[in-house]
Length: 354
Image (cartoon, rainbow, N blue to C red; front, side, top):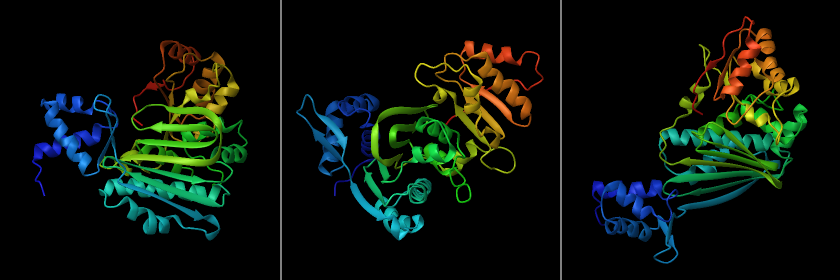
């Protein structure tokens, strides 16, 4: 077996970690990073191709490199057999994921068991499918069911306007249609632990990407199944504890802080001007001790909207700390206007990673 020197290992690790972002010019990017010739990088690329880690396509000038799947696996589970998520994890999923750093395995265990249990308990479907694909850099998992649809279930269970409104509540956390058996924390924390988290259900897609301070909601044709998509780097340093601690405050270490993505309350070209819109934004935030209203991509708010949140609600709940972040000058001016003369705590601008 050919011995690879430490520098060669560093080059190959760099290629593996950056090839997804640079499929057509990974050779140039790596040569510039290591200050070596393209020919030297091509030697390592060829070795990765020969061992099956990297797959090339196209001719020389237009060659594209992609990480080759090292594992592809699918299994379907009959919900009538009442499959227990910890048993499925231990007997089926964990062996497919293989040996991993402890923190990575902990994140996968949490995400899989929470999403599988949600599909089993809430979807009213007959089957749950689990698909896993692993490369040298990342692992992706899809958990699907043929039930009613998670957003539709929440919409109907909580009497919400539509599926988009259900996503807004999911983004806050602590939402469940079965409070006796579920805390409503699973989807929220799973969406924050992984590099990429998506749910496709009904006519909408909800996405959260680690390190990006906002969520996406994309309207799309109705999907016949609900699919949860999880992606995680195989060597991330992230831990469950780091994520939980971001949303904990006080001595009880509970889920006491939330970030409300205010932009999700906007429909099309609608502006956030009314008290009814503000009340939708405020729904269930009394469950938390600290609430951060994220105004990113919100160009303006109306007086009634701001007054309902930063004066009326705050006066009714003086023990809840209200903060705002990423508000533009116009939004800040409106918030200050409604607070004038009111004896409430000044909303504080904070920067919070998600």
